[in-house]
Amino acid sequence: MKAFIFDLNGTMIHDMDYHTRAWRHLFNHDLGGHFTHEEVKPQMYGKNQEVLVRMFGPDRFTAEEMDRLSLEKERRYQQEYRPQLALLPGLPAFLEAAQQRGIPMAIGSAAIPFNIDFVLDNLRIRHYFRAIVSADDVTLSKPHPETFLKAAAQLGVPPADCLVFEDVPKGAEAALNADMPAVVLTTTHEVPEFNHLPNVLHFAPDFRDEFVRGLVEA
Figure 1 (cartoon, helix red, strand yellow):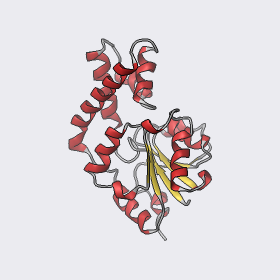
Figure 2 (tube, rainbow, N blue to C red):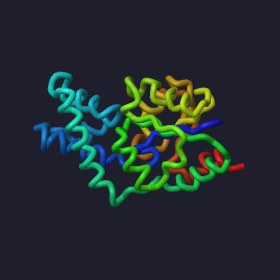
Figure 3 (cartoon, rainbow, N blue to C red):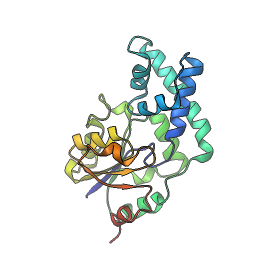
């Protein structure tokens, strides 16, 4: 592979449970819902506005209301997750090794810039990435391939030469739709949930995995 593209939440940091809890609090305490954790978890993909539409229908909120609720949710998530903020085990060494080998890297995430900046700046890893594609940069969310195709274009690497790191089926499906192979981090979903995706090369709990380390070792 000539380039790496990383999803962010659940792939570089183990934070998806914090997102689920923040959404559930917003849904139930602020919006009068009665959702369980198990009902909210499968909806943790795509843009925040799309999550709100999936949970409450297309006519409940104005665009302005969805933007406000999205920011409220992210502020709550950041407040709760900040003490735990850390890269997945092995990822600091992986990023450094990839950079030393001259492998260009990008982030392709459905997160808003507010959350991407929260991770990159607090962990001081922005310098590793030549391209960042956020929710604000695309029209169509994963599983549409737009996010990953834009990242590849910004890196100047053909899609088929990009390896995607993901943690959710919709993200791995987006990689498939972009003609990109994927490595799945099993932080959030079980292996059988990806059985329908032929582009998944490997499953790993974190970046200490032997296969993953082999991607940047001579």
